[in-house]
Image (cartoon, rainbow, N blue to C red; front, side, top):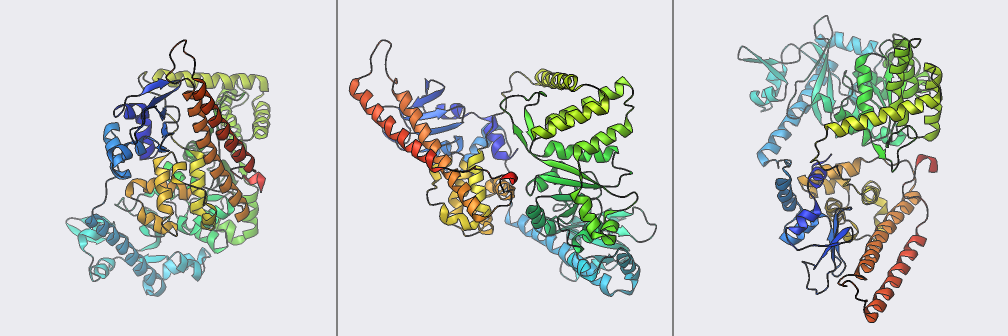
Length: 610
């Protein structure tokens, strides 16, 4: 959850507004005299379920942030700071110019080191063993240059970088030097070097492979202000475009696996840095695609570390909440696809790719769905002839089957599980429902009574509208009917207002403050299925239509509530006022019907629509 969402979850707009104005109950909502313009009859409404407000007199509206901005006369950042203090949430600290300058120098040091190592690999006589190793792994010169592979001597980097006016304490900070007995020395020695870049292409650290029997075989940069191994995927800077285009990220384990794949045109491949995937890495990938494929050695495909990585991926990917529980008891569905690419025994991905690129592509195309893989693991690791083995397999797999997005898939795998464990589908359905009830009861018992269930603060239509505009600049001319007032969420409104004044995403990144950076990257990172400009133009028009419909529906609700506002028990509504209200209702409803008729086609094109 982002910082802005966390603040909204902890605060309630009714509490915030009532600190400034006197609210009166009006059905499920609250009303008041508008604090932003003079009026005698209340036209200011607060909607607790939506966590929004709107004045039907002056037309202003939004969420709790926009209310505080308008009432206090402050900008978005100041309002967020005020509400963060009230909610007890820490905001991202703004970097001082000195900190920004130091961060830039750390990047510059790594870039200089990467070039130094690369030059050594190409020219240094002592790097012959490293060049032989690279050649034996089948990597050509273009791949070596593209990934800037290098070689580290026993000494030399320290002297080289000090001559470039970098300081020793900075080199220690970025992990290029180590320290022993008060003496600084080159951290990487006699190793093949792999620069590690973030998604923007900046060198944040290094991976280094020993070329002899030295231990450890692989050595990474230590944790530094710019390098966190758990949040980086090797090759992501070069793979992000292909992942978006193909709608699939292939995850391998080794650096050379990635390089070999890219050398042979398989550019949607990244590596998890030799460990199980982390939630931070999954957040990077789910901003690019909803389909992940793990390339695994079959000898270790069922081990605990691998299964943990898959579970982290499954837990971290997006879900869709359901209005009603399914027949298996679940109230959500996983909006992602996870598959497994089983490799030939003892063959690393780079070997398979080098020997038979077409065979590799065939393995990717025929990847096993996660459920098939896990059923195979269960069949291998459990004794399914015994009741306890059957029960454990069912308990492990039923929740995963229940969350499958496709109804046909759920039915298929339920039948497959029934055959695997020898239990009827009817019994499995009963077991799934029972497991869901048990988990829900446990959650209920462990949740303090004074904690209010989390509200959904997102607005899919607003965010989809902005995502289209941000990711498809050619749609700018089609956004004429879109106004800031259409966005109830302040962060969306702020992004939209800033977007109108820039020409591209890079300029927008520079314009928005630090408080909106996280939200902006979320919008830029959302995955849209492949489609042409015509399809996305219709989707944008549909979004704008939906936002306008929402405005009209709220106006209609206000008119309906005004019918009885101020009327005492037993008192009849004035006929003139009633006629006026009825006429306004007719006008609003006519506009609403017109807007609904203008909208055609789905708002969110899916792959099935293509």
